Amino acid sequence: MNEYTEDRKEQGFTLIELLVAIVVVGILTAVAIVGIAGLTDKGGKSACATTADASRAASTVHFANTNAYPNSFADMTGTTPPELEVSPDLTQAATTLTGTGWTLTMAGGGGATAPTFTCGP
Image (cartoon, rainbow, N blue to C red; front, side, top):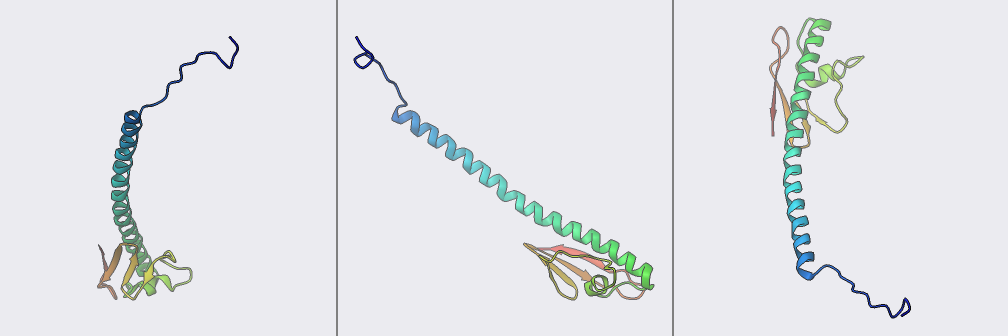
């Protein structure tokens, strides 16, 4: 017998085994997608909370520099050097900063009254 006529038994995966493997991969993918979706919500909340903390600190610096609390975000971002630096990805209005999925609102402020910062959707 030569190598071409040698009797070999080749075995592979059955159709059932392949289907089971595909179903398992599909289930694992679905679980991963659901887990990742929750992370973006947490990321937005964390980004807003971090920006609120930075804004509180900047309003205190503004008070130390001018002896008055700021009335708007522009009061803190328009100084040289800026007391508050915001990402170019954020939309800035007078009393709001808006990121992806969140909004930071500044209320009060001016004179001797410290502003409050509130995160929202």
